[in-house]
Length: 343
Image (cartoon, rainbow, N blue to C red):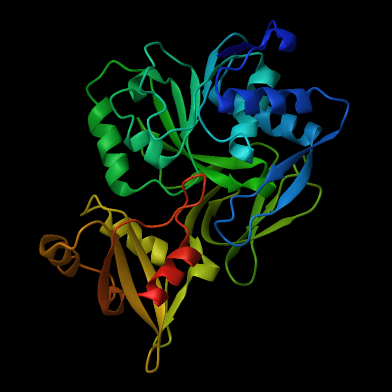
């Protein structure tokens, strides 16, 4: 199904799949007289919840993204993210705001499988990108969100596109449901930035813990306090270090698991998650959980990594068949911890 927002006739839209039906249902909600729409959070950092967002704020967010990427009327966009969440909803809103032609694809792990035309804009999760590498050259502007983009995936993307004539630009996103999708982008290809760049009219600062504070008056009238530890480079750029509630305290040393995961994923392709298990002497024992079959080769690669600190080396390496994820692809650390406790 393709929705032409430059010539929108919702009564003429006919769904053939359950997902297309959900997109039309949201579109009807969007075009209704209500000033707000309901959005569900992913549940990656706690219990999922539903809250309402003003449509005007969503339009403001859509304008920021479309202007940053230079999207124009009649450009083609592709939605392949669940429309229950802000990520999918905002793809529809961006298409509405900029009068794009929206191609509706089922949110599968291979959403570009049948794509045979160039698309100007698409948003995907890292897992979707990993399974669509032979097609990403067809996307002119690709944003990746829902989870951190691993170093191995960044390297693979660069290898795939470096010698092509593709016009593709790829960005990693920073945001959450409460910021109406992303408020900052970090270029992955063709350039490889170290810092996220926030959109115009958004101010950033840190609290006493070192966590990011966001003031985006066009999106939220209040200052949004996050639990994300950051390094701020200048007024509109920052580097994400990790979530403060993921920080592991092992023998009095604070360890940022996301930083270790980034380092390890430069050496191995498997998904890896660092966690802190309760330990009588250390308080928390640093472990690495690897997705896949147990492998002496993988264990050897990890033990040979030159970690910045000796206490960054995991005390134990555990293999699991599958690391649990939320519906939009984020690693579910809470569920993973439960699985380990049940072992």
